[in-house]
Amino acid sequence: MKSLTQLIEKIQSEFTFETSRSGGKGGQHVNKTESRVTLVWNFCNSENLSEEEKELITTKCKTHVSGDFIRVSTEENRSQVKNKKLSIYKLKKILEEVFRREKPRKKTRIPKSVKEKRLKNKKSNSEIKNSRKKIDKRDF
Image (cartoon, rainbow, N blue to C red; front, top):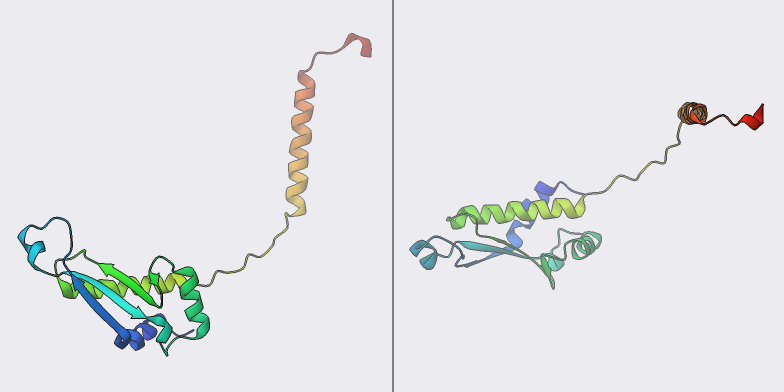
């Protein structure tokens, strides 16, 4: 697997950006500027990804994938340029999550000394509780 930063630099020419008016507060500024940016990337036609990587994207990234495209929207800033940069950053974070390999768990045994200590504690607790019982007169 290539470095994710290098991959983003290579595929950046494949991105298209759609702009629209963002919602929420802002008054007149929101009503007249298109500051929301949606990054659209056709990852299925990308030559920079292997078939295995494309399959990982489709299975692990269902919330952002629609058909052959990944869509990432950003409307956090008033500036369209900042939102473009932020959407690229968000895509990078999504791809990091998709391509991250989890380490396999190594099975471990409980050490013998730990088992012995646990049994010793159980035995001492048992003796303490037995000493609290009433003595039956028939035993003598």
